[in-house]
Length: 194
Image (cartoon, rainbow, N blue to C red; front, side, top):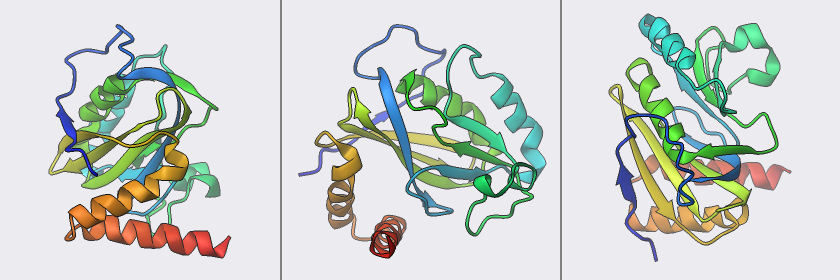
């Protein structure tokens, strides 16, 4: 059974209270539904005329935090940063863990991405932790028309293995969600190739 997600507003400042509902030692993964499909990281295109705003948001990230946020132009970084179907000359906000784990408050990730929102094209992805604590949540991020909406979903622990069951339930509840349907089909197709 799906539980209606809790929608959140971004906090006004970076949080330091270590609320266990949001703070933890996470192994973050990003399941991207649009505009590209990926089951490891998310590439969100920066609007070409707003690159300076994206760079300003990136510069505003707290320096003492290990962020899974990167500002990347794939043509300058090489094949490891390529996105299938994306223009390598474009600038992207990329969400990917480059360290094994990070200690982060999910509200701070929300606040950081909200600062990027006016500079970004439409995109949608889920973020979740594949282990450590807690690992029973998925945050759905949706950039649309320069704004960010975030919804927190709860599901059974061990999301690295159980998230596809969650996505199937979500598809059943929202039969018109073509982006989610395409994502699930692509992940299944990739799994049969390996």
